[in-house]
Amino acid sequence: MPLARPLPAANTPPDGPTAPPDVEIMTIGDELLYGQVIDTNSAFMGQELGKIGLRVRQISSVSDRADEIMAALDQARQRAQVVLITGGLGPTKDDLTKHVLARYFGTELVMHEPTLRHVEQIFQRFQRPMLDVNRQQALVPANCEVLPNAVGTAPGMWFSDQGTIFVSMPGVPFEMKRLMTDHVLPRLQAQFRIAPIEHVVVMTAGMGESFLAQKIADWEDALPANIKLAYLPSFGAVRLRLTGSDDGQPDLRGRMLALLPVLRERIGEYIFAEEETTLEAAIGQLLLAHNLTIGTAESCTGGLVAHRLTNVSGSSAYFRGSIVAYHNDIKQEELGVQAATLAQYGAVSEVTVREMAEGARRRLGVDVAVATSGIAGPTGATDTKEIGTVCLAYADGTQTISREYVLDRGRTLNVEYAAQSVLTLLRQQLAALA
Image (tube, rainbow, N blue to C red; front, top):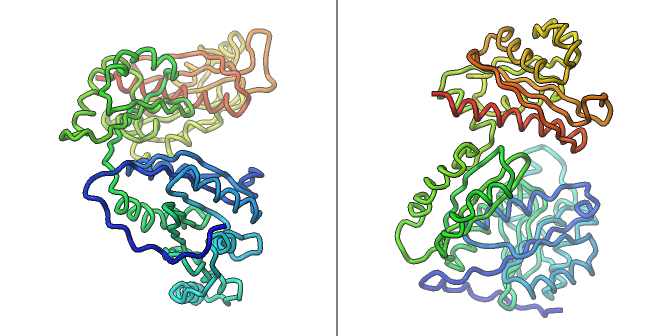
Protein backbone atom coordinates (compact mmCIF):
# COMPACT_ATOMS: atom_id res chain seq x y z
CA MET A 1 0.00 0.00 0.00
CA PRO A 2 1.41 3.44 -0.90
CA LEU A 3 2.66 5.58 2.00
CA ALA A 4 1.26 9.00 2.78
CA ARG A 5 2.76 11.67 0.55
CA PRO A 6 2.27 15.42 0.35
CA LEU A 7 0.54 16.59 -2.77
CA PRO A 8 3.03 17.50 -5.48
CA ALA A 9 3.25 21.04 -6.68
CA ALA A 10 0.96 21.85 -9.56
CA ASN A 11 2.53 20.82 -12.82
CA THR A 12 3.42 23.54 -15.28
CA PRO A 13 1.43 22.78 -18.43
CA PRO A 14 3.58 22.00 -21.46
CA ASP A 15 3.84 24.55 -24.24
CA GLY A 16 1.96 22.46 -26.80
CA PRO A 17 -0.45 19.55 -27.03
CA THR A 18 0.65 16.29 -25.45
CA ALA A 19 -0.38 12.69 -25.92
CA PRO A 20 -3.67 12.28 -24.04
CA PRO A 21 -3.55 10.18 -20.88
CA ASP A 22 -5.38 6.89 -20.62
CA VAL A 23 -8.53 7.20 -18.49
CA GLU A 24 -10.31 4.55 -16.46
CA ILE A 25 -13.76 4.94 -14.92
CA MET A 26 -14.48 3.03 -11.72
CA THR A 27 -18.01 2.82 -10.33
CA ILE A 28 -18.49 1.58 -6.78
CA GLY A 29 -21.65 0.04 -5.36
CA ASP A 30 -23.34 -3.34 -4.94
CA GLU A 31 -26.52 -1.86 -6.41
CA LEU A 32 -24.74 -1.55 -9.77
CA LEU A 33 -23.59 -5.16 -9.74
CA TYR A 34 -27.04 -6.41 -8.72
CA GLY A 35 -28.64 -4.44 -11.56
CA GLN A 36 -30.76 -2.42 -9.16
CA VAL A 37 -29.28 0.84 -10.49
CA ILE A 38 -28.32 1.47 -14.11
CA ASP A 39 -24.87 3.01 -14.56
CA THR A 40 -25.54 6.24 -16.45
CA ASN A 41 -22.50 7.95 -14.91
CA SER A 42 -19.99 6.12 -17.10
CA ALA A 43 -21.87 7.03 -20.26
CA PHE A 44 -21.91 10.71 -19.33
CA MET A 45 -18.24 10.77 -18.36
CA GLY A 46 -17.21 8.92 -21.51
CA GLN A 47 -19.10 11.37 -23.69
CA GLU A 48 -17.74 14.45 -21.96
CA LEU A 49 -14.18 13.16 -21.89
CA GLY A 50 -14.40 12.39 -25.60
CA LYS A 51 -15.36 15.99 -26.31
CA ILE A 52 -12.04 17.21 -24.91
CA GLY A 53 -9.97 14.53 -26.61
CA LEU A 54 -9.66 11.97 -23.81
CA ARG A 55 -10.46 8.34 -24.39
CA VAL A 56 -11.76 5.96 -21.75
CA ARG A 57 -9.75 2.74 -21.92
CA GLN A 58 -11.70 0.75 -19.36
CA ILE A 59 -14.81 0.91 -17.17
CA SER A 60 -14.85 -1.16 -13.98
CA SER A 61 -17.60 -1.79 -11.43
CA VAL A 62 -16.61 -2.72 -7.89
CA SER A 63 -18.61 -3.94 -4.91
CA ASP A 64 -18.86 -2.18 -1.55
CA ARG A 65 -15.98 -4.20 -0.09
CA ALA A 66 -12.84 -2.46 1.09
CA ASP A 67 -10.45 -5.17 -0.08
CA GLU A 68 -11.99 -5.26 -3.56
CA ILE A 69 -11.86 -1.47 -3.89
CA MET A 70 -8.19 -1.51 -2.84
CA ALA A 71 -7.40 -4.19 -5.40
CA ALA A 72 -9.29 -2.29 -8.11
CA LEU A 73 -7.30 0.87 -7.39
CA ASP A 74 -4.04 -1.05 -7.72
CA GLN A 75 -5.16 -2.55 -11.02
CA ALA A 76 -6.45 0.74 -12.41
CA ARG A 77 -3.18 2.58 -11.85
CA GLN A 78 -1.44 -0.07 -13.98
CA ARG A 79 -3.72 0.75 -16.92
CA ALA A 80 -4.43 4.46 -16.73
CA GLN A 81 -2.95 7.80 -15.80
CA VAL A 82 -6.35 9.19 -14.78
CA VAL A 83 -8.83 7.17 -12.69
CA LEU A 84 -12.30 8.66 -12.20
CA ILE A 85 -14.26 7.09 -9.34
CA THR A 86 -17.96 7.48 -8.53
CA GLY A 87 -20.01 6.14 -5.64
CA GLY A 88 -19.63 5.25 -1.99
CA LEU A 89 -19.49 8.80 -0.61
CA GLY A 90 -22.86 8.86 1.16
CA PRO A 91 -23.45 9.08 4.92
CA THR A 92 -24.35 5.43 5.55
CA LYS A 93 -22.17 2.57 6.76
CA ASP A 94 -21.92 0.92 3.36
CA ASP A 95 -20.34 4.07 1.88
CA LEU A 96 -16.68 3.15 2.22
CA THR A 97 -14.93 5.00 -0.58
CA LYS A 98 -13.26 7.86 1.29
CA HIS A 99 -12.25 5.55 4.15
CA VAL A 100 -10.63 3.20 1.65
CA LEU A 101 -8.95 6.09 -0.17
CA ALA A 102 -7.51 7.40 3.09
CA ARG A 103 -6.12 3.95 3.82
CA TYR A 104 -4.87 3.50 0.26
CA PHE A 105 -2.97 6.78 0.29
CA GLY A 106 -1.67 6.20 3.83
CA THR A 107 -3.40 9.09 5.55
CA GLU A 108 -6.29 9.89 7.87
CA LEU A 109 -9.64 11.59 7.54
CA VAL A 110 -9.74 15.21 8.67
CA MET A 111 -12.55 17.72 8.92
CA HIS A 112 -12.70 20.09 5.97
CA GLU A 113 -14.20 23.23 7.45
CA PRO A 114 -15.44 24.86 4.20
CA THR A 115 -17.32 21.66 3.36
CA LEU A 116 -18.75 21.47 6.87
CA ARG A 117 -20.09 25.03 6.58
CA HIS A 118 -21.58 24.14 3.18
CA VAL A 119 -23.34 21.07 4.63
CA GLU A 120 -24.67 23.11 7.57
CA GLN A 121 -26.07 25.71 5.19
CA ILE A 122 -27.88 23.04 3.21
CA PHE A 123 -29.62 21.67 6.32
CA GLN A 124 -30.46 25.18 7.52
CA ARG A 125 -31.95 26.04 4.14
CA PHE A 126 -34.26 23.02 4.26
CA GLN A 127 -34.93 23.50 7.99
CA ARG A 128 -33.86 19.99 8.84
CA PRO A 129 -31.87 18.78 11.84
CA MET A 130 -28.26 17.89 11.05
CA LEU A 131 -27.18 14.50 12.35
CA ASP A 132 -23.64 13.44 13.16
CA VAL A 133 -23.55 11.23 10.04
CA ASN A 134 -24.28 14.33 7.99
CA ARG A 135 -21.45 16.19 9.67
CA GLN A 136 -19.13 13.34 8.73
CA GLN A 137 -19.72 14.17 5.06
CA ALA A 138 -17.13 16.92 5.57
CA LEU A 139 -14.41 14.40 6.55
CA VAL A 140 -11.86 13.94 3.77
CA PRO A 141 -8.44 12.27 3.41
CA ALA A 142 -5.80 14.71 4.61
CA ASN A 143 -3.75 14.58 1.40
CA CYS A 144 -6.51 15.17 -1.14
CA GLU A 145 -7.50 18.38 -2.86
CA VAL A 146 -11.16 19.02 -2.13
CA LEU A 147 -13.47 19.74 -5.07
CA PRO A 148 -16.52 21.68 -3.80
CA ASN A 149 -19.86 20.03 -4.53
CA ALA A 150 -22.24 22.89 -5.29
CA VAL A 151 -25.36 20.71 -5.33
CA GLY A 152 -24.71 18.09 -2.63
CA THR A 153 -23.05 17.35 0.68
CA ALA A 154 -20.22 15.02 -0.36
CA PRO A 155 -17.25 16.86 -1.91
CA GLY A 156 -15.13 15.52 -4.72
CA MET A 157 -11.54 14.52 -3.94
CA TRP A 158 -8.50 14.86 -6.22
CA PHE A 159 -5.34 12.84 -5.54
CA SER A 160 -2.04 12.96 -7.44
CA ASP A 161 0.08 9.93 -6.66
CA GLN A 162 3.19 8.68 -8.48
CA GLY A 163 2.08 10.03 -11.85
CA THR A 164 -1.54 8.91 -11.57
CA ILE A 165 -4.51 11.16 -10.89
CA PHE A 166 -7.40 9.69 -8.88
CA VAL A 167 -10.63 11.66 -8.66
CA SER A 168 -13.46 10.50 -6.40
CA MET A 169 -16.98 11.87 -6.92
CA PRO A 170 -20.45 11.07 -5.56
CA GLY A 171 -22.47 8.46 -7.42
CA VAL A 172 -25.60 10.64 -7.53
CA PRO A 173 -25.69 11.55 -11.25
CA PHE A 174 -26.56 15.25 -10.98
CA GLU A 175 -23.85 15.77 -8.35
CA MET A 176 -21.23 13.91 -10.40
CA LYS A 177 -22.15 15.87 -13.55
CA ARG A 178 -21.76 19.19 -11.76
CA LEU A 179 -18.37 18.21 -10.34
CA MET A 180 -17.20 17.01 -13.76
CA THR A 181 -18.34 20.24 -15.41
CA ASP A 182 -17.15 22.65 -12.73
CA HIS A 183 -13.84 21.06 -11.80
CA VAL A 184 -12.67 17.81 -13.32
CA LEU A 185 -12.90 18.48 -17.05
CA PRO A 186 -11.37 21.99 -16.88
CA ARG A 187 -8.48 20.74 -14.72
CA LEU A 188 -7.72 17.82 -17.00
CA GLN A 189 -7.75 20.10 -20.03
CA ALA A 190 -5.42 22.59 -18.36
CA GLN A 191 -3.05 19.99 -16.97
CA PHE A 192 -2.53 17.94 -20.13
CA ARG A 193 -3.06 20.52 -22.90
CA ILE A 194 -4.72 17.89 -25.04
CA ALA A 195 -4.65 18.30 -28.81
CA PRO A 196 -8.06 19.52 -30.01
CA ILE A 197 -10.44 17.10 -31.67
CA GLU A 198 -13.65 17.64 -33.60
CA HIS A 199 -16.77 15.51 -33.90
CA VAL A 200 -19.26 15.62 -36.77
CA VAL A 201 -22.39 13.52 -36.31
CA VAL A 202 -24.80 12.26 -38.96
CA MET A 203 -28.01 10.60 -37.76
CA THR A 204 -29.59 7.88 -39.90
CA ALA A 205 -32.68 5.67 -39.68
CA GLY A 206 -34.20 3.03 -41.92
CA MET A 207 -31.05 1.09 -42.80
CA GLY A 208 -29.00 -1.26 -40.66
CA GLU A 209 -25.37 -0.74 -39.73
CA SER A 210 -23.93 -3.39 -42.03
CA PHE A 211 -25.86 -2.12 -45.07
CA LEU A 212 -24.76 1.44 -44.39
CA ALA A 213 -21.16 0.31 -44.10
CA GLN A 214 -21.40 -1.47 -47.44
CA LYS A 215 -22.84 1.58 -49.19
CA ILE A 216 -20.13 3.94 -47.99
CA ALA A 217 -17.17 1.55 -47.78
CA ASP A 218 -15.03 3.31 -50.40
CA TRP A 219 -15.87 6.74 -48.94
CA GLU A 220 -14.77 5.51 -45.52
CA ASP A 221 -11.56 4.00 -46.94
CA ALA A 222 -10.68 7.36 -48.51
CA LEU A 223 -10.96 9.36 -45.28
CA PRO A 224 -7.80 11.25 -44.28
CA ALA A 225 -5.59 9.50 -41.73
CA ASN A 226 -6.57 11.94 -38.96
CA ILE A 227 -10.33 11.43 -39.45
CA LYS A 228 -12.01 8.24 -38.25
CA LEU A 229 -15.57 7.02 -38.71
CA ALA A 230 -17.50 5.20 -35.99
CA TYR A 231 -20.83 3.41 -36.42
CA LEU A 232 -22.94 3.84 -33.29
CA PRO A 233 -26.15 1.82 -33.63
CA SER A 234 -29.02 2.49 -31.27
CA PHE A 235 -32.65 1.48 -31.26
CA GLY A 236 -33.82 1.71 -34.87
CA ALA A 237 -31.11 4.17 -35.88
CA VAL A 238 -27.40 4.40 -36.60
CA ARG A 239 -25.32 7.42 -35.65
CA LEU A 240 -22.30 8.00 -37.86
CA ARG A 241 -19.63 9.91 -35.96
CA LEU A 242 -16.61 11.41 -37.65
CA THR A 243 -13.80 12.18 -35.20
CA GLY A 244 -10.99 14.40 -36.40
CA SER A 245 -7.70 14.88 -34.56
CA ASP A 246 -5.47 17.90 -34.98
CA ASP A 247 -3.00 17.52 -37.85
CA GLY A 248 -1.50 20.99 -37.75
CA GLN A 249 -3.61 22.22 -40.66
CA PRO A 250 -6.22 24.98 -40.30
CA ASP A 251 -10.01 24.57 -40.13
CA LEU A 252 -10.27 20.93 -39.14
CA ARG A 253 -14.03 21.13 -38.73
CA GLY A 254 -14.52 22.78 -42.10
CA ARG A 255 -12.51 20.04 -43.80
CA MET A 256 -14.65 17.42 -42.05
CA LEU A 257 -17.89 19.06 -43.12
CA ALA A 258 -16.59 19.12 -46.69
CA LEU A 259 -16.71 15.31 -46.64
CA LEU A 260 -20.46 15.19 -46.14
CA PRO A 261 -21.78 15.96 -49.66
CA VAL A 262 -20.57 12.58 -50.93
CA LEU A 263 -22.18 10.92 -47.92
CA ARG A 264 -25.47 12.64 -48.72
CA GLU A 265 -25.29 11.36 -52.30
CA ARG A 266 -24.87 7.77 -51.08
CA ILE A 267 -27.30 7.56 -48.17
CA GLY A 268 -29.19 10.85 -48.18
CA GLU A 269 -32.61 9.23 -47.97
CA TYR A 270 -31.64 7.65 -44.64
CA ILE A 271 -30.09 10.77 -43.08
CA PHE A 272 -32.52 12.58 -40.81
CA ALA A 273 -30.12 15.04 -39.17
CA GLU A 274 -26.54 16.23 -39.23
CA GLU A 275 -26.40 16.93 -35.53
CA GLU A 276 -27.08 15.13 -32.26
CA THR A 277 -30.87 14.94 -32.22
CA THR A 278 -33.76 12.49 -32.18
CA LEU A 279 -35.87 11.23 -35.04
CA GLU A 280 -39.00 12.80 -33.56
CA ALA A 281 -37.26 16.18 -33.20
CA ALA A 282 -36.21 16.03 -36.86
CA ILE A 283 -39.83 15.21 -37.81
CA GLY A 284 -41.01 18.22 -35.82
CA GLN A 285 -38.66 20.48 -37.74
CA LEU A 286 -40.01 19.16 -41.05
CA LEU A 287 -43.62 19.63 -39.95
CA LEU A 288 -42.87 23.21 -38.93
CA ALA A 289 -40.99 23.89 -42.16
CA HIS A 290 -43.98 22.70 -44.22
CA ASN A 291 -46.55 24.26 -41.86
CA LEU A 292 -48.28 20.90 -41.37
CA THR A 293 -50.26 19.41 -38.51
CA ILE A 294 -50.20 15.75 -37.55
CA GLY A 295 -52.18 13.16 -35.61
CA THR A 296 -51.84 9.45 -34.97
CA ALA A 297 -54.11 6.41 -34.99
CA GLU A 298 -52.56 3.62 -32.94
CA SER A 299 -53.47 0.08 -32.11
CA CYS A 300 -50.44 -2.11 -31.29
CA THR A 301 -48.26 0.85 -30.26
CA GLY A 302 -50.84 2.01 -27.71
CA GLY A 303 -49.95 5.70 -27.92
CA LEU A 304 -46.16 5.33 -28.08
CA VAL A 305 -45.92 7.18 -31.40
CA ALA A 306 -47.89 10.10 -29.98
CA HIS A 307 -45.74 10.05 -26.85
CA ARG A 308 -42.53 10.30 -28.84
CA LEU A 309 -43.83 13.10 -31.03
CA THR A 310 -45.08 15.10 -28.05
CA ASN A 311 -41.87 14.51 -26.13
CA VAL A 312 -40.37 17.29 -28.25
CA SER A 313 -40.60 20.76 -26.78
CA GLY A 314 -42.88 22.94 -28.91
CA SER A 315 -44.74 19.98 -30.43
CA SER A 316 -48.08 21.66 -29.68
CA ALA A 317 -47.41 23.79 -32.77
CA TYR A 318 -48.01 20.80 -35.02
CA PHE A 319 -49.37 17.83 -33.04
CA ARG A 320 -53.17 17.86 -32.62
CA GLY A 321 -54.06 14.52 -31.08
CA SER A 322 -54.17 10.75 -31.16
CA ILE A 323 -56.77 8.01 -31.20
CA VAL A 324 -55.67 4.77 -29.57
CA ALA A 325 -58.04 2.36 -31.31
CA TYR A 326 -57.08 -0.89 -29.65
CA HIS A 327 -60.47 -2.55 -30.08
CA ASN A 328 -62.07 -3.06 -33.48
CA ASP A 329 -65.19 -1.20 -32.33
CA ILE A 330 -63.09 1.93 -31.81
CA LYS A 331 -61.45 1.50 -35.19
CA GLN A 332 -64.90 1.56 -36.75
CA GLU A 333 -66.60 4.18 -34.57
CA GLU A 334 -63.76 6.69 -34.20
CA LEU A 335 -61.70 6.15 -37.36
CA GLY A 336 -64.33 4.98 -39.86
CA VAL A 337 -62.70 1.64 -40.65
CA GLN A 338 -65.24 -0.41 -42.60
CA ALA A 339 -66.71 -3.50 -40.98
CA ALA A 340 -66.26 -5.29 -44.29
CA THR A 341 -62.54 -4.44 -44.27
CA LEU A 342 -62.08 -5.93 -40.82
CA ALA A 343 -64.10 -9.00 -41.73
CA GLN A 344 -62.21 -9.66 -44.96
CA TYR A 345 -58.66 -8.57 -44.11
CA GLY A 346 -58.52 -8.42 -40.32
CA ALA A 347 -57.32 -5.69 -37.96
CA VAL A 348 -53.67 -6.38 -38.80
CA SER A 349 -53.59 -5.63 -42.50
CA GLU A 350 -52.41 -2.89 -44.81
CA VAL A 351 -55.99 -2.28 -45.93
CA THR A 352 -57.15 -1.65 -42.35
CA VAL A 353 -54.20 0.50 -41.35
CA ARG A 354 -54.64 2.66 -44.45
CA GLU A 355 -58.24 3.30 -43.46
CA MET A 356 -57.07 4.09 -39.94
CA ALA A 357 -54.61 6.73 -41.17
CA GLU A 358 -57.16 8.28 -43.52
CA GLY A 359 -59.79 8.24 -40.77
CA ALA A 360 -57.41 9.94 -38.33
CA ARG A 361 -56.82 12.75 -40.84
CA ARG A 362 -60.54 13.37 -41.10
CA ARG A 363 -61.44 12.95 -37.43
CA LEU A 364 -58.53 14.93 -36.03
CA GLY A 365 -58.55 17.55 -38.77
CA VAL A 366 -54.85 17.26 -39.54
CA ASP A 367 -52.73 17.49 -42.67
CA VAL A 368 -50.80 14.28 -42.03
CA ALA A 369 -51.59 11.13 -40.06
CA VAL A 370 -49.84 7.86 -39.35
CA ALA A 371 -51.34 4.61 -38.13
CA THR A 372 -50.17 1.33 -36.61
CA SER A 373 -51.73 -2.09 -36.10
CA GLY A 374 -50.03 -5.36 -35.25
CA ILE A 375 -49.67 -8.52 -33.21
CA ALA A 376 -47.21 -7.62 -30.46
CA GLY A 377 -47.36 -11.08 -28.89
CA PRO A 378 -46.69 -13.40 -27.30
CA THR A 379 -50.30 -14.40 -28.05
CA GLY A 380 -52.64 -13.39 -30.89
CA ALA A 381 -51.15 -15.21 -33.87
CA THR A 382 -53.57 -16.51 -36.51
CA ASP A 383 -53.29 -18.98 -39.36
CA THR A 384 -52.27 -16.13 -41.67
CA LYS A 385 -50.59 -13.62 -39.32
CA GLU A 386 -47.62 -14.52 -37.14
CA ILE A 387 -46.42 -12.91 -33.95
CA GLY A 388 -44.59 -9.65 -34.63
CA THR A 389 -46.57 -8.78 -37.78
CA VAL A 390 -47.09 -5.01 -37.87
CA CYS A 391 -48.80 -2.83 -40.44
CA LEU A 392 -48.07 0.88 -40.76
CA ALA A 393 -49.55 3.67 -42.84
CA TYR A 394 -48.98 7.30 -43.73
CA ALA A 395 -51.65 9.57 -45.22
CA ASP A 396 -51.37 13.21 -46.27
CA GLY A 397 -54.45 13.83 -48.41
CA THR A 398 -52.79 13.22 -51.74
CA GLN A 399 -51.47 9.76 -51.03
CA THR A 400 -51.67 6.92 -48.56
CA ILE A 401 -48.67 4.63 -48.16
CA SER A 402 -48.60 1.41 -46.16
CA ARG A 403 -46.03 -1.14 -45.11
CA GLU A 404 -46.09 -4.58 -43.51
CA TYR A 405 -43.22 -6.03 -41.49
CA VAL A 406 -42.56 -9.02 -39.28
CA LEU A 407 -40.59 -7.85 -36.24
CA ASP A 408 -40.66 -10.81 -33.87
CA ARG A 409 -38.37 -9.58 -31.09
CA GLY A 410 -40.69 -10.03 -28.13
CA ARG A 411 -43.66 -7.89 -27.16
CA THR A 412 -41.87 -4.80 -25.88
CA LEU A 413 -39.43 -4.58 -28.78
CA ASN A 414 -42.14 -5.34 -31.32
CA VAL A 415 -44.06 -2.31 -30.09
CA GLU A 416 -40.97 -0.11 -30.02
CA TYR A 417 -39.85 -1.18 -33.47
CA ALA A 418 -43.33 -0.55 -34.86
CA ALA A 419 -43.21 3.00 -33.47
CA GLN A 420 -39.71 3.57 -34.82
CA SER A 421 -40.65 2.17 -38.24
CA VAL A 422 -43.73 4.36 -38.65
CA LEU A 423 -41.75 7.44 -37.58
CA THR A 424 -39.08 6.55 -40.13
CA LEU A 425 -41.78 6.24 -42.82
CA LEU A 426 -43.22 9.58 -41.73
CA ARG A 427 -39.86 11.37 -41.92
CA GLN A 428 -39.09 9.95 -45.35
CA GLN A 429 -42.40 11.16 -46.74
CA LEU A 430 -42.10 14.60 -45.17
CA ALA A 431 -38.55 14.98 -46.49
CA ALA A 432 -39.81 14.17 -50.00
CA LEU A 433 -42.42 16.97 -49.95
CA ALA A 434 -41.68 19.88 -52.25
